[in-house]
Image (cartoon, rainbow, N blue to C red; front, side, top):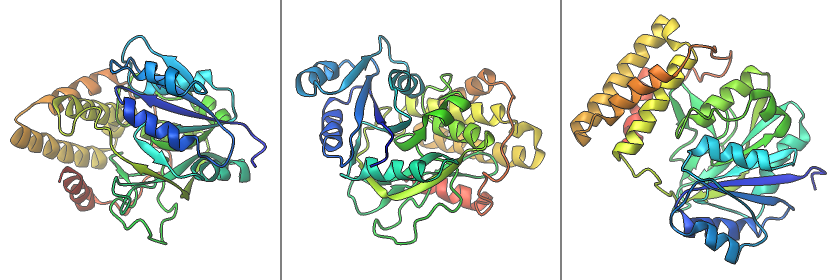
Amino acid sequence: MTGLEIDVVVPTFNGRELTARCLEHLGQQTVANRVIVVDDASTDGTSDMLRERHPEVTVIELERNAGFSRAVNAGIRASTAELVVLINNDVECRPEFVKRITGPLVEDSSIGMVAGLLLQADGERVDSLGLEVDSTLAAFPRYWGRPAGDKHLDGDGLLGPVGGAAAYRRSALEEAGGFDEAIFGYGEDVDLALRMRAAGWSCAAAPGAVGVHLGSASFGRHSPRQVYHRGWSRAYLLRKYGVAGRPVALARALGSEAGSVAWQLAFTRDASGLRGRIAGWRAAHPELEVPDGVVNRRIGLFETLRRRGSYRA
């Protein structure tokens, strides 16, 4: 169909049965593709299951749990196709997912990345159609909570795809340098999209590329580990992209981050979010600028706070 080869990279960590279900759905795709599963040092027998039940899949086993960025980069390095699709192991793709998410890359050479449509576990509501960011680079899943059959899902305000349902042009990935391996989890897709946009690549939405996001909860919802890594990535990106050098954005970021930390302390009685932010800030170097035209200006301060409150519920 495309004339270009397609490799599908699936990172997994302790998600044996979810990964098996993901691969079953990938086996039903309407276009040819090669699947590469990166086992990020699972301890639940994932690699054994892959060898026994899916010998057709290329398996990369990491010696230690390295995080999403390193796992995906390992899969990309092992791939050879010009079109690279990323799918989280907790996503069940409909049969035309791979065909539809790679379509825009074939049709338009200026497009470097494509966002697929993820539905929530019940299949009734939208989980995301890519990502959008406010002026402080706080990222939000586009159209979250909308009815699955909504006919008005488009690419307006789209920054880039979520890492769990994305397609990339290899040349664009290589030009941008791939995923930042300093980021263990959360925000790596935002960072890559920003660098690809800065390099001149555009992003398209593919609402016809549908997957159901079951939710693996690898970090555990509101667990100290999850809160730490979210905080780390948030501060890391704020400093990496020089938000501190823009007084209005910095004041807004400080206010919203202080609110998040206060909420975490009040409701989880844990300072992991604060510790993560301190560590992430220290790890970053202010080296890049936010590209023009990537911020969704309709997401003001109150809208940012409203969305954060909705996702915590």
